[in-house]
Amino acid sequence: MQGGYTKYPCFLCLWDSRADDKHFQQYEWPTRKYFRPGFENVIAKPLVDCNKILLPPLHIKLGLMKNLVKAMNKQNEAFLFIQKKFPHISDAKVNAGIFDGPQIRSLIKDPEFERTMNHIEKNAWNNFKSITTNFLGNQRSPEYDTIVSGLLESFKMLGARMSVKLHFLASHLNYFPDNCGDYSEEQGERFHQDIRTMEERYKGRWDINMMADYCWCLKRDETEPTHKVKSIKSSFIRIY
Image (cartoon, rainbow, N blue to C red; front, side, top):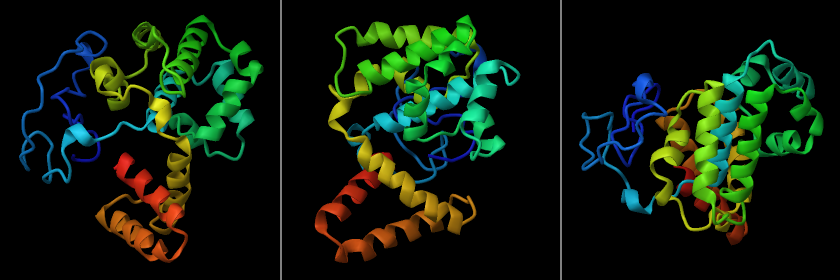
């Protein structure tokens, strides 16, 4: 798919990411029938069948956290609390809601964070915690569809923008595997650590050259223990 602020970023349907007036209102969109380069934001033929693509729980969680923080009032106590809790994170990343797994878990365990929130923020935060445990976690709750609906409603009240990861929950809930906990976050975290080093080398520029360099790094690492290489490769395949 084409990068940037793409009009049709979903590989399953023709969801219009720029139709703000329809977000949180319309959840059924035309199914994507073909991937023709040059049309509907497709730049190359897919490498794999779209039915074989996995939606990694870790990246869905990171995307939801990003939506939540970006929708917060930057002058409110809750947002200022995040800045104080993670002083080593740049203001640009905090404003953009860019956090990793350990940082999110640290906020979830901190009761003081919730006490700094207003009613709307607290409702969205509690729904976020609920979905990470009861849907994206090790066990799926029998009432997961109700939990997802509650998350969507609370994010709408907060004024969060509908991102592609939130869209997957809103329109393609049945596409997720029966138990997201079957897919370990450890591999996703390892990928983040490796790609962070690669980003520093390329000064944050994501392009085909950087990804090719990363693939060659995996190839060179084949001299290391087999289980380590397989873990990194499977993480790369799931995310990209």
